[in-house]
Length: 174
Image 1 (tube, rainbow, N blue to C red):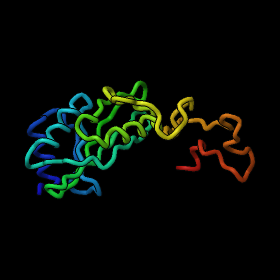
Image 2: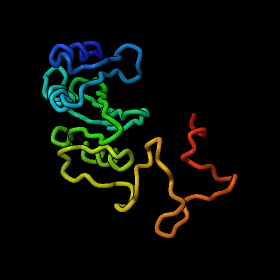
Image 3: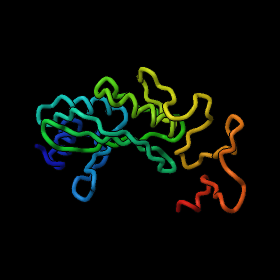
Image 4: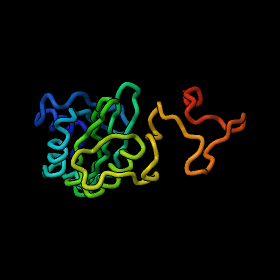
């Protein structure tokens, strides 16, 4: 079992400038932040290296940081009994990340969900389409600037009264 410091050090040694930041001591999810252009190489290393053996992708999540998006990958090794997180950042306009479906089959669903709710494009995904919302839904509801529609297909989605706050109102979430 490798500890978070050892995992981060191995990545920094193997990928030098591709590791932009790390937080392995004071974090619930020890992680490194990596260049998006090297994401697939880093994930392949984490999967195939005998000391790492990250054979399971638990989750992918998109985070709206305001001026950019962060994509977070939570990975686990059943063989070595350790977990770690990889993060990468992409611009808000035209966010693109390489797919990791060829490495972890579970990525298929996670990438589709992140695409559906955040609008992040996973290049090379075999079937990137909405998974939770209807195919003709406009926008991506987990973005901070998303404007919730009043209705969809004739169904009222929200009311305009004092008992039904606007979910797009930033003051509710600050």
